[in-house]
Length: 73
Image 1 (cartoon, rainbow, N blue to C red):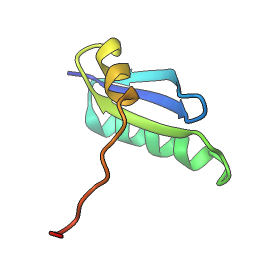
Image 2 (image 1 turned 120 degrees about the vertical axis):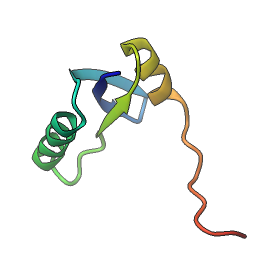
Image 3 (image 1 turned 30 degrees about the horizontal axis):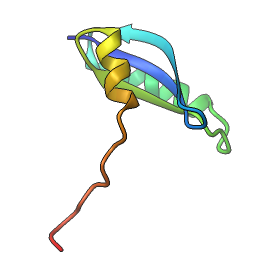
Image 4 (image 1 turned 180 degrees about the vertical axis):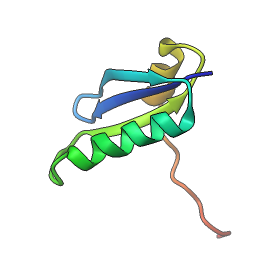
């Protein structure tokens, strides 16, 4: 399965397709390069997602993420 790379704007939620890579190392290098070029105050984020199709990638990126729980309560 390929790695899809998107630019995500939060308000309103918009997904802008950037590229797709078959290898994790290539996708990671592209995402890191794009993130390093962004100004610090930029409200957009660059995300990489592992999915079968662009539609599945967009569906996964559109779902709200649960807060990470570290340790037990």
